[in-house]
Structures are given as C-alpha cells and as structure tokens.
Image 1 (tube, one colour):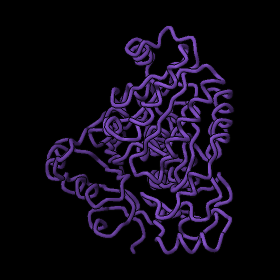
Image 2 (cartoon, helix red, strand yellow):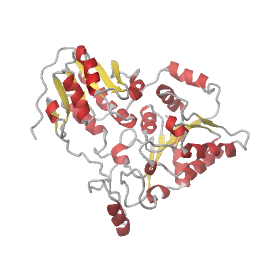
Image 3 (tube, one colour):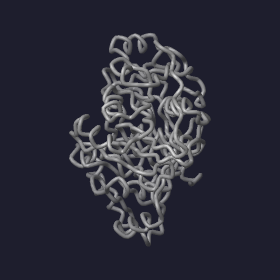
Image 4 (cartoon, helix red, strand yellow):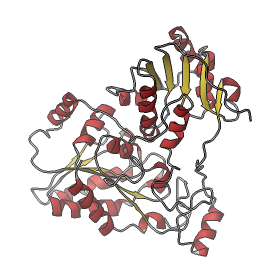
Length: 391
C-alpha cells in the first residue's frame, strides 16, 4: 500500500466538502473531528454532504456552514452532478465506502482524502492508512461464541482478541475520525461529541407536547435499537425498571422511538404497560414514538434529566446534548462506540460478565446472557445516580 500523500495547498478560505456518515450514532461520533477541522480552517466554507434523513442534525452546528442532502435512492451520478458546479477545493470522506469516494471523484474535486480501502483507493488522492490502536469490530461466529461460553472465559475480550481493560482506551470510534482530520493538520486530541439546539426549539417542543408547566422531572426511555434485537435489553426488564423509578422519583417518562418502532411488538408491549402506570392517577407516561422529527427529538432529549436507552443513535444524540445516559450493553462494546468521550462520568454503561460479549451479532444464537445478566436493580440504581448528577 502506498503511503499517504501530503495534501496540496489550499486557498486562504477553502471550500471543504465533508462526506458524512450514513447512521445517526456514527454521525454524532464525527462531531469532535468536525470541530477540530473548523478549528484548523476557521475561514473555510465547510459543507456537509449527508443522507437526507440526517440533514437536520447539522442545523445550528458551529462546525458546519452548509448542508447538502442526499435523498434516499439518489444515484452517485446525480449527487456528483449537483456537486460539480460548487467547485470544492477538497473532499474529506468520513465513510469507508467506495460510493463516497466515487461521488467526490465524479464531482471533479481535486483533493480527495479518506481511509485506504479496496475498491476505492483509485478515487482518492490521499489514502490514509489505519491508525495505531484501531480495533476492528468483527462479528463472532456461532462456534466461537459456544467455545467461549464452554470455556467460561470471565473477561471482556475485544473483537480482535485484545482485552480492553480501560474505558479510556483510544480504541473508540471517535479517534478514527480524528485521525482523518489530523492528516489535514488538525489537532488530533479528542473533544466530547457535541450537538446543539436553540432556545426557540426547546420552547417549541415544550408547547407542542404540553411540557411547559411540568413541575416533575422528565426522564427519557428509548427501548429500541435499529441494528437488531441483540442490542435491546429485555422488554419486561425495561417496563419493571421504569415502574420502579417512577415510584421513587415521581417522574414523567417520555417514550422515544422512530416510525418503525411505532408498529413494533416491543413498543406495543411497553405501551400496553402504560395502563398499569395509569392505575395511579398521578402517574404519567407520554409516548412520542413516531411523533417527532429529528430536531424535535433532539430538543426533547435535551430536556430530559436522564435517558435510559439501548446502544442506539438517540443514545449518542442525548450524550452530545449534555443529557446523562444509562445503557445496558450486550452485543456491542462501550469501549468502541460508547456515548460521549470514554470515561465520561455522567453516563452509566452497564455490562454483564458474559464471556461471548461483545459478539457484534444482530441476534443472539444462544441464551442472550449478555443482556439478561444485567438486573433491574442494577439499572434502577444507575438511572437514579445519573439523574442525581444532572446535566
């Protein structure tokens, strides 16, 4: 593999295109790199090219001057045709996909920087080699899982066989994006992921969802996770935890979820438990599943004292807005993709001692011990601690 070339000279106020990632959580984890890029090029026009479903994420963000959306189904040729007249000086490609590199190449952007990967290296002018400390997320085979369980290996093992014993390890995904902007001369030191909502947005959601006069603490509950059921703490445990916390805190629970969650059995099961909550006339459980756009979700998460959530996009959003999160982790690794900066003391990231975790599988091929091994009592305690810490 050829060593990365040094990028060429840029104008005093360069036009920089950043190709954003395709998933909400990943996008939030890119924000430290974007802030460092803006710090390095304060006079640059930084344009974010992003899937349309994520475009609202970047409104009011200080590191982004402009957003170009990619509608679902738009071809790479159509995207390039729209980019070409803009005469960008440089494209920074955060995803590792061939498509992102091809978009920039077809658009005629003279400098194209991204990680070296098969099928796209030819389209890059600067190919960045993997950084020291990078840990690849590899899905475990069913046979490997059974062998680990049979051997009763009582330790947390990374997907490449390295033991991750320190939550502050530089294996976290945010360092992948910081390493890319460092190739442009930006400071590689981590910053916490940051998102922003305006005071007007906060007032608007308070009015729309009748939260303006709320005198009780607002807690958020996000029981879904798009990647698959292996990332979801069991529903019966989630319901039991929410009920116990409400008894102890007199809180208002807001149930979050996307449009796909609105029709899922999981959300339906939690909503069916709402009747039990309402047996006490003072209880309150507000379902906003499928009822918010992304900016409204962000504002509501900002209002929460704490969010109980699975490893998901909203987990990252809440943490980046300053809201403490409590997360049961099973098939995925908080050392690699946890919320906020590693070792952020506001958050509570819970794991069992299952020897097969993290497996990075969508579904569990055995008995789901990584999640069932996390008790209701443990999560209740973590939520109360996080809520007491506040924003």
